[in-house]
Image 1 (cartoon, rainbow, N blue to C red):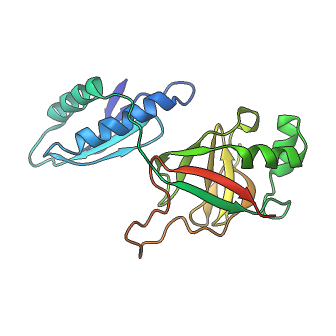
Image 2: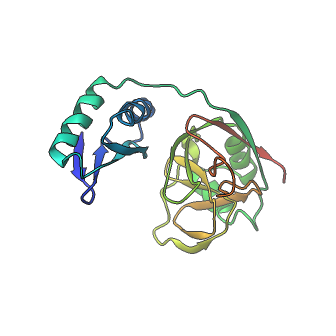
Amino acid sequence: MRISMEGAGALLLDIAGPVFDECLQRRIWDAAQQLEREAAIIQAVPGVNNLLVTFDVLHSDPDEMTRVVQKVWKQATPHAISGREIEIPVIYDGETGEDLAVLARHAGLCVAEVIKLHASARYSVAAIGAMPGFVYLTGLDSRLALPRRDTPRLKVEKGAVIIGGGHAGIMPCTAPSGWHVIGHTDVDLFDPSRSRPCFLQLGDSVRFVDVT
């Protein structure tokens, strides 16, 4: 466990190991909920095996907040969040999923097998971050895990269904990305006019449905 300052009013609790740990992630969810009950803490934001904690610098100091974070982390237990079950329609083809063939070669599979594996898994929203509405999805079949591109694309379209390392995801907006593109969905993941701008929430269960 490492705790570091991120600016004057934030601490980063980093417990990431060489591989993603689902149990640690659920413990992070519990720690975040506990920390947000502390008066001096503004927000606790779960990342991928880490937790960013922002606090009121006028009524607390980094040393005090570090002790609070350490205490809460020791008390935290793996916490299951009861989320919704969401189906995401996906078009898988060579035009919208330009890395399908690359992924198939890497996995030693044909493209149809890659699509079947991706669409048959059940995913969970482990963290929200990187950009508004972007979700890190766990549950990817290990045969489809693929390191991110050495050179990120400068433009990956909104709605791109992507894979990066051992996680799956969806682009909530058009932006640069080093993740591999395997399909496209029209589901809008982020809309600031909604009461909940992020369509997917922590603990939601996601299934991709092939509508090619």
